[in-house]
Image 1 (cartoon, one colour):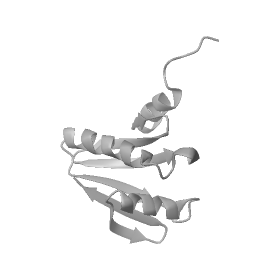
Image 2 (cartoon, rainbow, N blue to C red):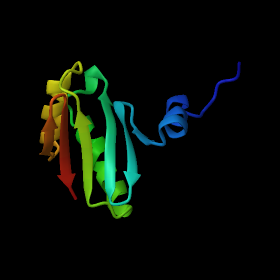
Image 3 (cartoon, one colour):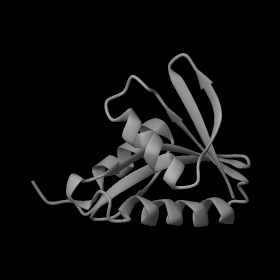
Amino acid sequence: MELRRVNVYAQYIKERENQDIIQSEAGFLTYKIVNADCYLADLFILPEYRKTGAARGLFSQLIQIAKAAFCTRILTNIYPSTNGATTSIKTALALGGELLAAEQNLITLVRYI
């Protein structure tokens, strides 16, 4: 089998979820732009890169992409019952997110840009 230079996960995300991906050696984030909103779907940083600014670096790239697409905000949903939800909320708040809505098992945060 020949090695492929195409990122299979990125191709899967685009095809199945209609999302784009920003990647680095530290991790990735997936997002989707709809009208003036940018939806951050996933943000994952490898354990050895956590608390190094890697998430902020990826998020900064997303802000630039969203601004170029004339988005006015970045939204993300966090499910409190998910493993690591507390860390996700802390990270989103540290990146400038604000609480937009909270329901039984769904927290929506927004970052205006």
